Structure formats: C-alpha cells, structure tokens
Image 1 (cartoon, one colour):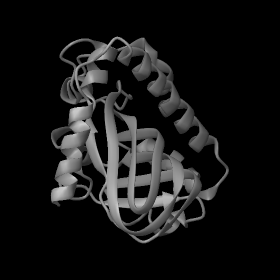
Image 2 (cartoon, helix red, strand yellow; image 1 turned 180 degrees about the vertical axis):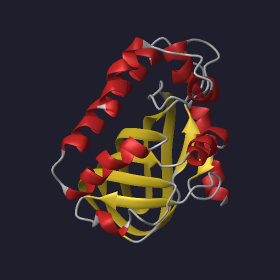
Image 3 (cartoon, helix red, strand yellow; image 1 turned 45 degrees about the vertical axis):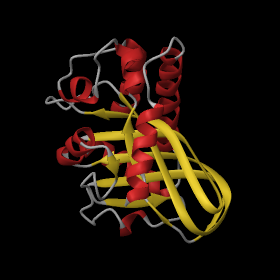
Length: 223
C-alpha cells in the first residue's frame, strides 16, 4: 500500500505546471484516443462487440492509447489518457486528462504496449475517479472486470462490475506479480487544453470548458 501511495505521488509530481508544448501533446493524445476507440469499435474480435454495446449504456469512459509495460523481476507500466463522461442529456462531454501507472514485484519478464479502454458503467464510478486519485478498486472504490482479445466476453459482462477494462496488446509479458493501477490527474494538460483552472470537476462534472479539438473524439464515441 505504501508503494502505491508513493507511485500516486510520483505521478502527481510529474504532472507539473503546463508548458508551451503541453497543448500540442494534449491535442495529439485526444486524436490518439479517437483512433483507439474507433479501432476497438470496428474490430471483429468478440470482446469488442461487447464494448460497442456497453458504450451505449455507459456513463463514462477512460481511453489510454498507449500503456507501456516492461519488467525483469521488478516491473513498471504507465501511459496517459482521457476521461470523458455523458452529460444529463446523455451526450458525450469533453475530456479531462489523466495518467495511469503501476509498479509490481514478482517473477516477471518481457515488454508490452497496450491500448486500454475503461468503460465506466455507473455514475458512481465516474464520480469516484474524479473525486479520488489512487489505486483502482481500492482508493478509487470501483470494481473492475478485465476483458481482452481471446477472453470470453460473456463471462464478465454480467458480473455487476462498475468498470469494464478492454485491452489490446502487442508484445510479450509473462509471470505472476502483485500490482496496482493508479490514476492521477494531468492538470498541466487540462490547463494547456482548456485554459487556467481547468480540472476534472469543472470539465467533466460541471461542463464549464470545451475545445473543438475534442469534437471528433466525441463523435466517435457517439457513433
């Protein structure tokens, strides 16, 4: 638990004040998120038909276009992404920026790059992510069910999980480990994308900010 807390603090420190290049990086991440969601939705593999149906009912989604994982006895992974939620009318809003990271110990080896989409099935899951920073399933009180290529989607779709985690990965990662995925806000990119003072609360919950650079992502989610 101490390790997870230190990891969350480290991610928060990395997300410092916005720089001149942050706006371009944030815009590029939004486009990559659009490519990820379109690629998964158009995939013919069985798990992603469930993704299409779950998105119609979802209250929100987190999209991480590239989460890198590597390890040799000690492992680490991380990547940045966006949180998008539906408003009171059921329309997709504008994205807030986050980083996801994890560290692990145990017998493990290899490297992997993954696209990860977290479907937030309840408003409570959306609110919990916005309210808290920390480990999914613990600090962020939401149950997670994992779905990936080659896994039976039907076995996880009725578990009552708050979050369904869909992934597509390239590379090899083997072995068992103890790990926790930690979410931390990227307020530097929120500021760069929208202007000073933008936070997940004011972007997602209050709908006070917008940026046309995210409109194509919102259209892809609604399609």
